[in-house]
Image (cartoon, one colour):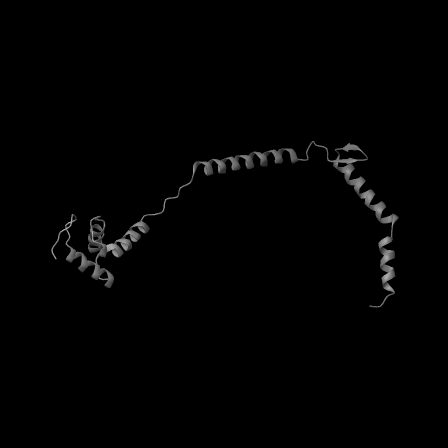
Length: 145
């Protein structure tokens, strides 16, 4: 059968190349020749399998393009800007220097040393007034487990 196609390859030559391809003996030039042959739209149905194989290989050779939608890009940029502005605002307002440190008995106290002394005095008063924990533990010392 010597029918020529539009791509200058005969069906006999195509069958020969397909057989060589399945045996793994084709060169790159022969595979390109076969690929060009299989892109012809007027081929008989018997070449559908090979056409599908080479179409799959052709599609996988091209690197996948990443389609990032503009809305996703805008949302990402907006989120980054919000996080940056929020972080700067928190950093500026969370700084303890020159700000009210504590409220004691309804009064603002800014002096760090005064706050430390009041805190240590209140802890000392708590420890010295109640020995409730020690009393409760002494109850358990008499019991055998």
